[in-house]
Image (cartoon, rainbow, N blue to C red; front, top):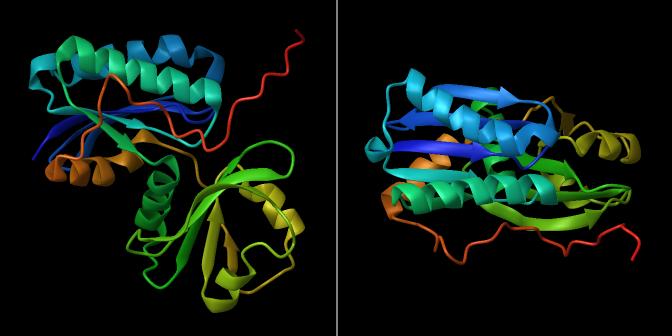
Amino acid sequence: MPLILHIDTATTIGSVCLSKDGQPLQTLVNDKQQDHAASMVLFVQEIMREQQVKPEDLDAIAVSAGPGSYTGLRVGVATAKGLCYSWEKPLIAVSTLQMMAQGLLSRVEDTDALYCPMLDARRMEVYTAVYDASLHTIVAPHALILSPEAFSEQVSAKKTYFFGNGSDKWQQLMPPHSNALFVPYILNAADMVPLATAAYERKAFEDVAYFSPFYLKPFHSTMKK
């Protein structure tokens, strides 16, 4: 089983995790997005020093690849790619939304429900998807402008968990329904471990030279020309 370094900077919470044999060994977390560029490299150095791991010991580097914050994703992917280049390691990309679903599923252990992660995309828009308890995609990742009718099909059919930093505004908008459950969740690189380990076993690696984050929608700058 592999020794994998995991990096997540998709939101304001950034984290680095080291895993072995599909189990997290240690995780370090930073809650200041403006520090991600510096803190991720320091976290990598710290976690490898404390776990007595050398670059040559690693089997792969995994990154939370989006959707999420444009700035955050660029920092995380650039860091992961730089390490892959320097250490000659394969790159594993993990969907941020599927990673979130994996994380909540491991906490609630509800095998008869749907999982709907939500990341804030500003105003009334979110990045979202829907997964079943086997993490099969029911609704593919997309950018969604919320309306009261959103997810009516899912909550009518089955208990559905809504979570992530975009779920609060959905909770305020949606009509109450007994199948709609809103639960707290904070993104953490350790939630990437099962998905990245499975990808490693399948040898599902990215092209380090050409890989870019899954932004889902184009970047629009608010700066004046």
